[in-house]
Length: 173
Image (cartoon, rainbow, N blue to C red; front, side, top):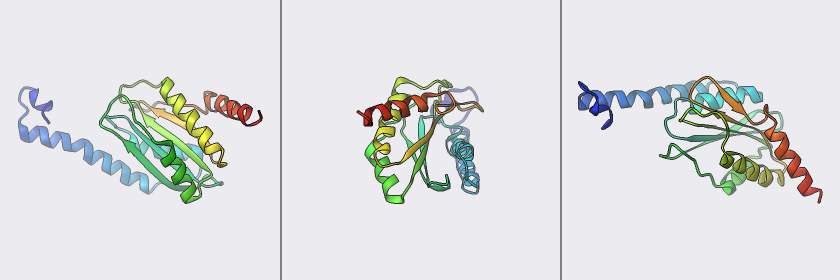
């Protein structure tokens, strides 16, 4: 609200009301997402977009699925930071084991509008892939949203295949 009140003609009450709109929209969108049927990787991407669209800080969601890509559970990680989200790989692994997941889809947003993955995004994906792979849990995709309609898929661009290839070389040594 403080930043909105710097606009000429915006009172404290108006600024508070405007800042609440974003939260109301996010809650409405999450409510819509909870009614969405999830049975494929594309429907998981659509679901993730509903969960973290309109984000103004970097958020990451992990969707856990079984061997038929049926939704089991999701976790949203969010920090008051527009640049990064720090995730404990052990927590993701523990959740996957606890609920019996055989696959995950990772999705996060870049509030700055950038679609390309950062080196940190790829490194996190690689580390999580290696940790989950030892438990026969596969990362199906890592998708980046930019706040608009566009997204970047590490699966579609071949990054996931390269990570999988690196993992296979490692375990065959």
